[in-house]
Image (tube, rainbow, N blue to C red; front, top):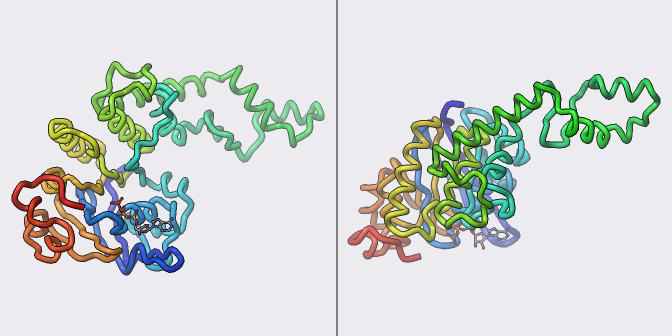
Length: 300
Ligand SMILES: Nc1ncnc2c1ncn2[C@@H]1O[C@H](COP(=O)(O)OP(=O)(O)OP(=O)(O)O)[C@@H](O)[C@H]1O
């Protein structure tokens, strides 16, 4: 995958009487690390939810490297290269660290038309299916039987694909600093490592656009600094465009090349960090004076 260009044109999202986004236009060039900031309720998460297909915008258009994606189902948008993490970490708590990443890998483990981890079926009959059809086995019961047979027999090409997925998952875990934790249960990881795991799982879908929702929330300054380095490394090594929602101004100003500021669902400013920090409208709506002086967590 190469890094995606994102163009959001006049995006609007209404929830009955409430306008969560109004006429938001943003362009993020390929490979940019872009910040999305604004007070609580400004529409940042709604913006992400529109990009991932979780919400269908009520107006406007979203283009990923020229392809219109607004209104497409979330799994299709994931397949086109958009991945995200969540403000409240959403891991499979009782699965191992490695298994969590394999969940992200699974859409790429299609083997000869059969996806070994999902129930998606090949469009043509496999050898086992042909045999069962010849023996008069009802077609309606075929899926269950094929899955059980596939799980027991696992032909060599399936085993090879599984091994490749595990190897790649291990590489991703090493890339985010979780080497050696593969067999731990996700719920037993320290908080900062859970955030890293969520990023590894997102990377497993091979994104060209990575959306990070408050990646340093709850971290101390040292952990937040390490996360900033990780975000830069991910952009460089995995060739992704990155958009992050973040309240820690030290992080936003340190890692983002450009920033979009939302307030009450509208874009009130955009530009490089230095200009955003000086922008009177942004200071009044969001930053206040504390963040400008100290560079700390902006008052919500
Ligand atoms: N599904 C929904 N139904 C109704 N209103 C919603 C829904 N999702 C979001 N909203 C409303 O849209 C507005 C924007 O919310 P959103 O969560 O996008 O803000 P935010 O900038 O991400 O805030 P925060 O920084 O607190 O996470 C809020 O007023 C919120 O209550």
